[in-house]
Image 1 (cartoon, rainbow, N blue to C red):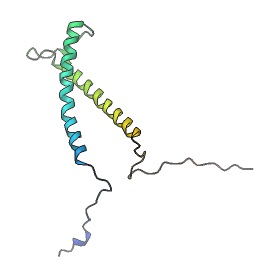
Image 2 (cartoon, rainbow, N blue to C red):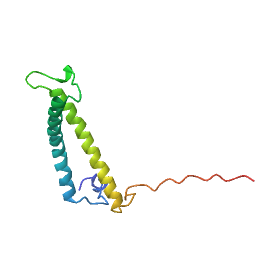
Image 3 (tube, rainbow, N blue to C red):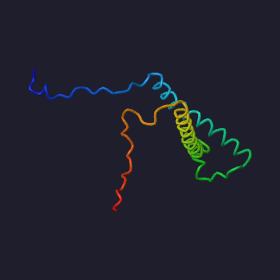
Image 4 (cartoon, rainbow, N blue to C red):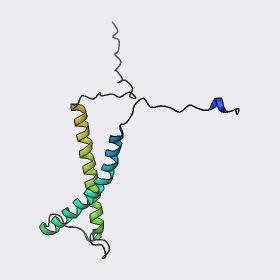
Length: 120
């Protein structure tokens, strides 16, 4: 027994448990959304070339070996943000409709405003 054994901290246990399915779904979504956004960007850029919705600047064309590389990356990033935002909105709506509590076990209670006493 060393002299520092009694000073070691005990491992902390979390008051909640995350179901492994939710971790798996999150991991899959982190892999699928960028891939779907890239292919969505390809489709959008092809439709833009056919219909001429937005003029793409020359700076976004990229190197000749990869035409429209920077435009693809920019549209992919925009689609990723948009799709993650839609998922967050849907999750919060479903959480509210399912009756989840507003505050979790680690949230502090809401601050109540102080009422000033009136002087008479």
